[in-house]
Length: 352
Image (cartoon, rainbow, N blue to C red):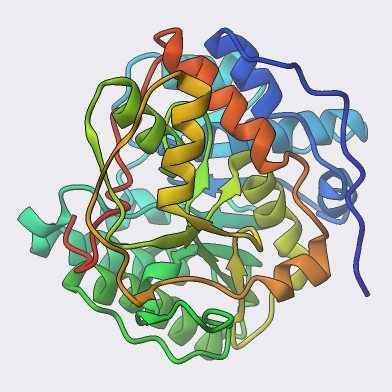
């Protein structure tokens, strides 16, 4: 049965500042508070310092506040980004500085009622394969062993799937993984490690296979709009992809705590709409008043998802594509900040 998400408070026509963006992106979405109300203890987010972690932690904290819960949201990270730890703590999130590759440090982490695992390595992974494997497979073994029996949502990637025909419906949760790069192999390794500990200790988990979260400072939409605004070409060879508004992805991850299983459940976490890079470039060109320079010809295969399971469970996204594109175009035109983390959406060999 489909659970319909009601659109939350009316969204602004444009987003002007980082503070406004972070307020919008961390608003508790429908179902989040109801799921967190089931917890009998604290929520721990491991790897909170990445692109999505801060907004996920803040959405969880705001949802707990709305339902009057005194349980904590605990964010764990090395906290290498200046000011992030202070920012999270100012918003009611407890923080612990921890190297998750340090066995003793992981063993010293406090207990939690549930965990969301977001740690790992992607960017620069092709130049540091041993570190990539350590972070994507050894680190999960330390965490999974420490939190035996604790319900866990594990962030994974749609990149573990094979390239499939763009004429079909896309990969489903039943499609066998077939990683096309060493990085993607290490991500599948992460899943296998968590699966092993799930089976060994009956720990309930869910593998959250994310396909391109987007917000205004990074993501496919930002990369394409930024390239057009800066008179750079847009390579459409890879053709198509799915994406999801980051706040919706975060809400989905939190709500997946109610769908953990042993052995692990699996979810293609993305939006149902298959986006054409060429069409996005053309539409952004109109929004930006520029003529996009399009490079390449679409291949007949891509990693595209069938997101029907996610839609059936969680309903539609709260922000439509047109609104997202208008927000991103305005942000780019007005010199909005970038996280400096390109998606490399044009890459077909998985080498980042």
